[in-house]
Amino acid sequence: MSIIAGTYEVSEALSVEQLLGRLQEVLRTPASGTITVSSINGTPIGCLRFKLGRLFWVTGGQHRWRRWNRLTQQLGLQLEGVTPPAGTREDDWEYQVLIAGLNQQKISQEQAIALMEQTILESMFDMIQGSQGGCQFSNSLGADSTSELLSIPNGLALLNQAQENWQAWQVAGLSDSSPDSAPVVRNAAALQQRTSPQTYQTLTNLLNGKSTLRELAVVMRQDLKMLTQTLLAYAQWELIGLETLADIERPGRQRAIASQADQGIAAPPDPRTAPPGGNGAPLVMCIDDNPKVCEMLEKILTSAGYQYVGVQDSLQALPVLLERKPDFIFLDLVMPVASGYEVCSQIRRISSFKDVPVVILTGNDGIIDRIRSKASGSTDFISKPLDVAKVLATIRHYVPDRVPNAV
Image 1: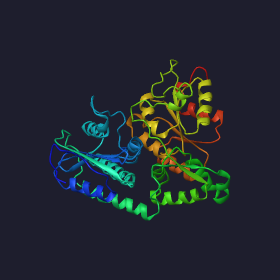
Image 2: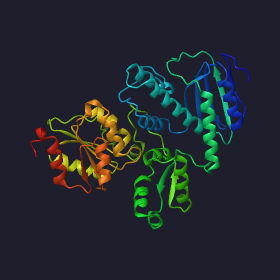
Image 3: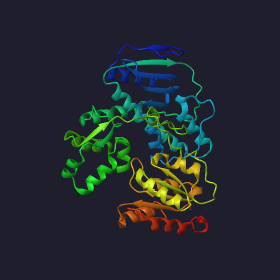
Image 4: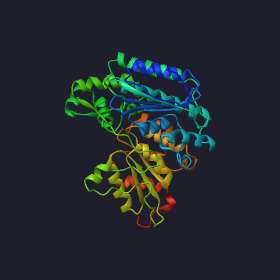
């Protein structure tokens, strides 16, 4: 294949090996442009953007925004409130946010490159897995106006690494298992019989169909391949299943609640845009994936005259925190995707929240949990099930000068 600027090529059906060969050829030349990979029936699988032979972004797989949220949290990037310039194309959103973060000195170039490399590795892996039944390759070459502030000089090495990761995934017998699938408990009674009480509690808490294997590997601090092999053993006994999980909305875009709209159910108010109360009472925030806990705290606090905001998705905790600026935070310890320890550490990295009381909620009132909670920056610790008097006494203790008149 000749690499000529201004050309556009659509390939015939390619095998994975042929696709990798085409990509390697492009990355060995000083070409600029976009490569789009699609399945035989035309479904997009991945897209590579490059300038002068250097990669600057790759997308692939079904979870573009879940990946962005997971990796920015995992790498500790402080990008809350950073937005790309007006008029930024949707396919250029992440890259332009990184550029803006650099310009605002919220992240370093090393952090941005680390995020780019991890994104490219995962996206290429997903692209390879999605091309197993054959694919098409379209190549649009030409001038590219993208900033050269951020690019990956070792794109070919990343492609080779992604290929090695896929081969290791195959050798492990996981070819048909997507790391973006979400495990869910199918037979809780049988699972309890086959596992220890601690393992059973862990699995039932985490395997709720709301977190992908990649997200769980981060939360559980486990190797992704080994975790998937372990869970597949339970799946063979039909104790758990692996489900397809939809992507989340892009950060900054209001999440649509399609299932409720289809049923004619009014969507709950978005905690990021809910107006603040007018009584001047402290705003208490609860971050807990259990809706019953959130409902209970809301009743306790609003009855006592406090303002309340609840968040059940740990990935949305920081955006809501920055938007609503609570005076006090209750934080669940065990949550999918990001644990209470991780969320608390992220809160403490934000200078304006370093002194806001953060009280951990947990059903495991052990010394290790207390030590880890303190190490992550928590203020105090409350055991579940919640006691009304204890909840209110704790808030009054840490926010004594702003007790509502109703209390």
